[in-house]
Image (cartoon, rainbow, N blue to C red):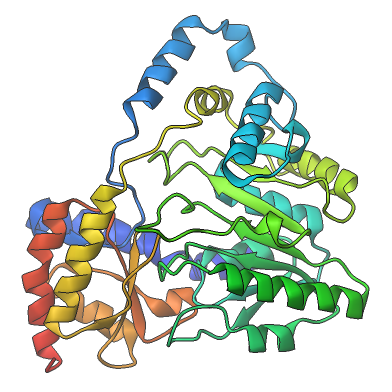
Length: 395
């Protein structure tokens, strides 16, 4: 008999993954070219050639015992120093290897952070709509996820409600910008206001409240949009990063945590995060991929591909009569459904072989998420089907 906690988690298993699996079955039945699967944020831009070349070179030339052996739980010191140097160059920070822990992607980074910080009953605030797995990550450590209602006019944080819901039990605040699922980027003004609220609340309650900045989409921004680096605005910030999107490596699970020296109880927090990495079973981030990151620290994927998809999809949906905001970053578009029943809309879309994810999975019913990190042809060929779907609702 599985644990009672897992019974609930299995019942609430990821809708996104379920849609992805359904898409594979539909592709086998109808042909992949006739199925428009927008369910999963799986990058469709290949990793830079330099990544493949680095893998080959490292495997050929690195001494096997050194490459495949254990290292510090936090990761190779030289890799961590390289990551810190890159951040300092880009954002004007002053990190070193003792501020960086290499992780098994952003998901492991968040789990390590929550394992490090949360006591049972501690509260973690998130802004709806939000990545649904956050709830599971917090439950893993007997925390309580506190949702801030979505501002459906702008999809920016509702800071009035945020201030009202901070309590003496608040331990963390998750910030995800560029945001999954909306593609919204939080402005510097928003971050400054949020930081001011948190500083005031820390003084009021005599507690430490940590922003946990989840940043797998940091490099995926369009035009002249800038993503503020939150450690520069709020001292108690921990950053979780993944190369899954920026280097198109979602299957390799490599990323890092930034734990600045200025956070409250830095020495204890950093030491505990290193131990959490081990006892959660990650032990350390994969050694080969750490070496690859060191060699490819300045590599990027071509986001112009996603930009073309973004513009084509947005303009096509607006033309069909749907309502949505133009994404500023990431590779998702959050579209309002013609009725308030997003699950009904998802079912209706399947009649046209369109797979999208209900907004209720992100804490925001009445919307659907469309992942446009797909082949451009998928976007183009789906638009006539979206138009038919719109017609069913009289749009």
